[in-house]
Length: 264
Image (cartoon, rainbow, N blue to C red; front, side, top):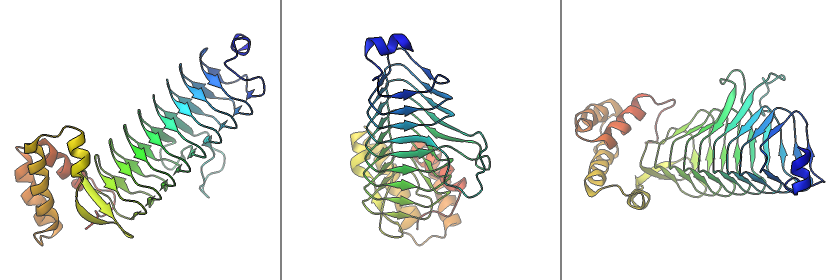
C-alpha cells in the first residue's frame, strides 16, 4: 500500500482501509473512501469522492466516476447487518452518482454485476440484482430488488423496474418505461406500464443477427402478441418453431421460467 502512495496512484487525501485488498496499479482519487473487505482488481480507476463498502469484489479495468457509491447496505427493512456482498466483473463503467447496494440473506446474499456494462449517471441497482454483460442503463434508470437483467439489454433514461422482474437479453426499454412484468428477449417496450412495441430490430442488426434469425424472431413476436392466442397457446406454437431456431428456443425458455407474468 505504501508503494502505491509513493507512485501517486492513490491520492494522499483518499482513505483506504488496511483491511482492503487493492491491486498495485489501481488508481484512487482524492476524498474517496474504501472500506474493509473490499477487493479491487488491476487497471481499475476510481475518481474522487467515491465510497466503496465491503464485502465487495471489483474486477479488472473498471472505471468508477466521482460520487458513486458501491456496496452500501441494502435498502431493505428486513436487513439487520448480515454479511452480504457485491460482486462486480471486469470493464464496467459507473458514472456519476451511481448507487449499487449489496445483497440480502433472503435474496441469496449477493448483488452481481457482470462484464462490460455501462451505468450512466444517477442509476440505482438495488439489493440482490443480477446484471449480465454488455448491459446499458441510461441516466436515472432504477432497478428494484431481486431484478435480473440479461446480456445486451438496454434501459432508456428513467426506466423504472419493479422488484423481482426479469428483462431478457437484447430487450430495449424506451425512456421513462415502467416495467412491472417480465420483458422477454428481443422485445422493445415502452409506456407506464410497459407495453410491447415490436422487436428491437435496430439493436439486433447492430449485433449481427442474420436475416433468417430476424425473420424467426419477428414470426415469434406475431405469434406471441398479434394472433390473439392465450399465452399457453402461443407457447405451444413457439415450441414447434424453437426446434429450428435457437433465438425462438431462448424466447420459449424465458417465458417458461418467467418470475412474473410477461408484458402483454
